[in-house]
Amino acid sequence: MKYKKLGATNLKVSLICLGTMTWGQQNSESDGFAQMDYALEQGVNFFDTAELYATPPMDHSYGKTEKVIGNWLLQKKNRAKIILGSKIAGPGFKWIRGGGNEYYKKGIESALNESLKRLKTDYIDLYQLHWPERNTNYFGKLDYQHDENEKKWNEFDSVLRILEKFIKQGKIRYIGISNETPYGFSKYLELAKIYNLPRIVSVQNPYNFLNRTYDIGMSEISMRENVGLLAYSPLAFGYLSGKYINDQMPKNSRMGLYADIWGRYRKEKAYEAVDEYYKLSKKKNMSLTHMALAYVNSRPFVTSNIIGATNMEQLKENIKSINVNLDKETIDEINLIHQNNPNPAP
Image 1 (cartoon, rainbow, N blue to C red):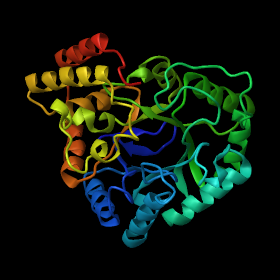
Image 2: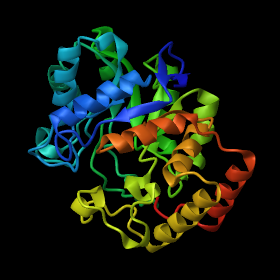
Image 3: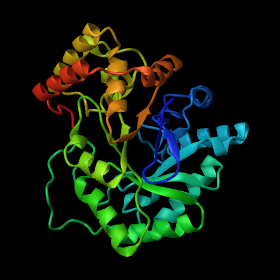
């Protein structure tokens, strides 16, 4: 396994991070236990979850993933070996504290304490804001539409002051953001510096062959400010594993089960791009999965690559990508495909 420092902290996180969002919906607790056991054996010390999980988000599955992790930590008694990240949900789901703005003191306090209880731990290493409260372009919305009548949201410095209190209490070690834009990224950094508030150490945004929007603006901030990307959806909901090539729809796959919910990558241009990447992977005698993950692993602004699997075979292949190194010729060919098919599923 390879490791990188989490921002300016002394924490060294594995370049492969274990994503957990299917546990409690597509996967059982025993599946989750097996995945955590195997990942830890392979040197993966970084697990990512959220209060929202399991996914797709539903009221009956809310919080289930954290419970799986908490039960595993209780059984294994190895909390100190794991760098654990979780997230407070943003607005939009009525079963989560009414569905309104979440990043106020009582909202954060409630979310954090409930996560700690489910996770059966007294601290979270990396506590992240899952998505912005304000109206902006995230979750596949590329073009920002300004609304003069936008509802009021909690200001950046206010959120940082609230999080600071829980850091001082020892419930949170470090903080991060997720599904953010260059505006939000830069404002959190600017205001932390001006008011001597806690500094974010990571950004969790999507990054894969079909969505390299992080390259535009965000990557420069990451490099210059030492706040790396925790890349999620590196296989684009499985499209970059090749399993949906030629209109295949494997039984119990995410698209097979939830295609109507997960429409982000179901676009004609995305299908065309996947075909091109698939042909290149065959030419290079490697799996499309390994090529896609190895590319994300190689990006200098990436701190950790969040993989997710619904079975052990997938998990093993994903983790093995850490041993795949792409030569310059392959990266050049990947970039050429990208130039001809830029961000077909942002």
